[in-house]
Image (cartoon, rainbow, N blue to C red):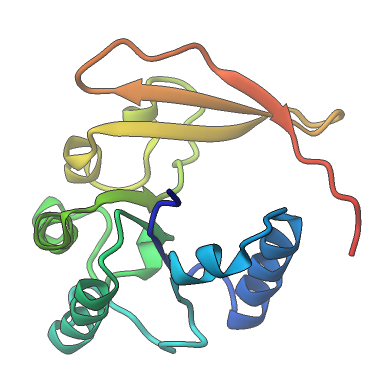
Length: 179
């Protein structure tokens, strides 16, 4: 049974999000495409030009939409444009993270929050996250993606977990067949 997924996308323009979704959709081989459509909720800049988690009205609108859709998993892309707080202020970040926790508890879904690294190259992933330590303290697990080899365009996916030993990194390439 397909998982019901919500994608709240704010990093890219509505056109780019639409282009990416179209290509993902076209790459999906299924005899029952309606299962994908009925199990995917997308809120990009096309659906809501602005979405700020610490804006009461905007948050309530999102929460109501998620209650109706009932996703099992929600992806928020990208954290730094989903709030108006100072990313380096623990108090402000805890307030935004409480909003995400509210979604998780009220909807009963898992959350993935896309966030970027700072410029530091060394240390654990939680140490390399941009912003306050409240952000790293909130996460239960991290998946970090970085370029392992620029020449071959090989990416490295590494993991960090609070409650278990992390698995070994995975290396992969994205191969585009064109449009």
